[in-house]
Length: 258
Image 1 (cartoon, rainbow, N blue to C red):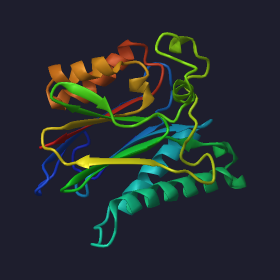
Image 2 (cartoon, helix red, strand yellow):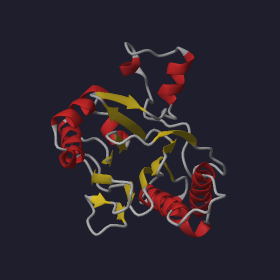
Image 3 (cartoon, one colour):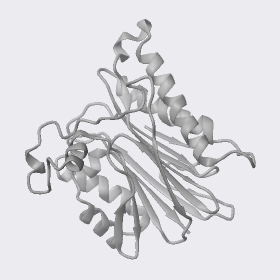
């Protein structure tokens, strides 16, 4: 599901001092019947987000939509001089978590019980780029031919990497490596990770669900960015993930700083 505050869904351009262009593509993949991913592109207030929902029936679809709606509601208004961006981001994640958790525990919506979602977002100001995440949807930064992963997965396999129980050689043998350890809405409280860096024209950011990062290596993502026009990168990433099996919903959001 693509939420866009622009006239065109796959291409948005600012008209102010911050020249940002965003391209988004979301696809159901080859194995799923419902696309439970949601995307937010708001170029007026420079809010970009990807959410990957989880839950039986339509729970995941509902949860991811609620998450990006909360981001839009909290951050899609002018900030006052005293409001810190980090505080607004935390407020958005808390609101999304509270709404999803409450609805999933409402006896009138028993089919939504246990739903939750990942949420990775990028908020741009004239001086800084803020990246926040919960779950295993990722944000990358591409510059000078190199790709950096800007977020850390909240997943079982990442916990095992940190504990030294898993390495690159035996990671393919791990059972339950798609299990996430933190999500928006599954528990009554959630804390998002937030990192920031200076606004640098020329940098490219890529936000995606694990339907992409789980099938396409970081090296291949970097190669796709290097070898394709920016308006084609999201489409090519989705195509490659489908060619690699397409076993999950696939979402790719490319944000280019000019």
